[in-house]
Amino acid sequence: MCFYRRIRYGLIWILCLVLGLMAVSDATYAADGQNVTQNWSAEAAFYSAPCEETETFHMTEEQFLQYKTELEARLILAYSTYYHQLSGEAKSALKDAQKMWIDCYYSYIDALEQRWTQPVKIYFGITAKERKTNIYRDYILLMLINRITDLEEWEQGRVSNLEEDFLVMQTQKLEEDKEQLQVDMGLCLYVIQEEFRPKIRKAHANFYDFLDKNREFVAEISNQNETVMVAEELKQVQQMSYLTQEFYQGCRFFRREREE
Image (cartoon, rainbow, N blue to C red; front, side):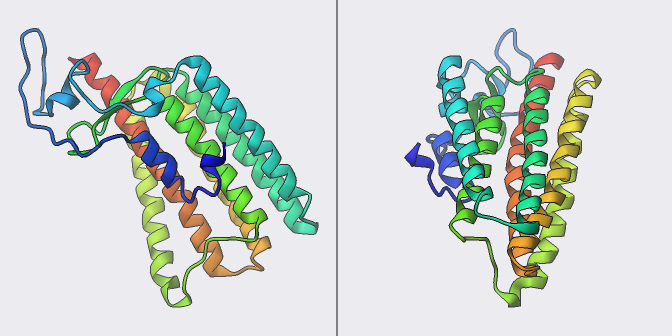
């Protein structure tokens, strides 16, 4: 578990998941018995074609559950340690934010378990990003790692920040990224059939409930420091944006399989 200590923005984990992504693919057409409606690369269009494979793609179910359980235990420890260091409004705000995060976490488990527990290809047609992976495992493990990292960083007195001169620019970027995240979440719903949408909508809504509560908590620990508040909220939005884009690609994969 020491490998994930102090992971910032989940970048180290992401690098571990994306193995050898520098291979370049050429456009191809369908072979006998296969139907391709766009000129995706061979690695993207045909699941049986050679393609990079992530760590979660190779995990057995037992390995995944063991790792997930270990991360959940570490999350409990990180939260408990930090919670007992706080007092007053900050302590109460952390409790509320953590409750919202747990609701968000389990709602995503519920949504992803509907269909996305099997390996898929993502980023098909996007050069150097195509890979076989497991959306469910990626999503759940990275959600845990991101939250653990936040709690451990805060407990050590480290918060995201930015220069005062960049506050206006970063505030604008935060709004733009939030708008794009809503678009990406909408695309997830658009490309999957109606029966799967209610649980996905609930997960999306729960994330925004968490985002609101987390903002209130950061306001408490930063004494309403706007530069810290913007930086921390931008981090949360960008982390969810990465996961949502991966989820969207997984949804597209399943839709394409049905149509072809």
